[in-house]
Image (cartoon, rainbow, N blue to C red; front, side, top):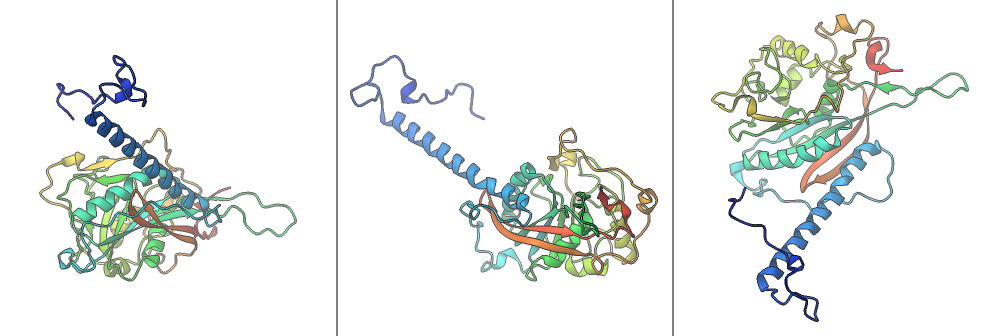
Length: 342
């Protein structure tokens, strides 16, 4: 970052060639040395404050609706560059960034501040909703024996449906946004997709997925168009395939899909945070799931999603505001017996 001819500033107490005065300072201590020392102490103090308050994000999403010891210590909010409610240059539309989430705290701590800065620089009015799936740890039983734990598998599509229904009426379009995908190119368009769904993470730009019908990663839709598709199917428990089914919904609704043009950064357009060695994806196919995953769900969607919001928490992550929804999804084991690990 700095030219090699530059040296790191030497702190006063690192100068062992001179003795100390009675006041505890080196004889050759200068005003510059004191300034560097104070600046360093101030930096580390701010770093400690940021790390201590950012830890509340994990506590909020891990709490899953349970009370914690004391209120969250939210970081002091960093105001956006403009007062967007008063500045007409920010435009009339407001984006709801919907982030399906489960136990990926390290990625969330990077994602929220990054997206706040990125969207604010582009003057996009927005709010980030972290859609945290929490589990039903037991089910009612008809005997005195304790119920065995039941773990619901991750359902990205159902979480997006819930986020759509629970997002503020002040937003008029959504971004279905993976938490591990960060836009790097300032030329990417996050504006209102009036003409039709806009796939930001197109196959030509996404670092991993390049097939033509791919619509995952980051997809923008007006709320009107999302309703026209009846949202996403709630039948996809586990990882994958829900985006492919949604592509067929888009086409079935008569909507035209748009993608970025003129972006020259290729597969370096995004930063992908996911580490497959550290986070294993749930790709198991249970019972009839292998056959059902390729079918179009013509009945389910926004109108059939069943859930309960255990808690709603406003947080600030690195100075960036967001709302964490702890969501309990209901599962019909008759219709989708693959929804749980028992």
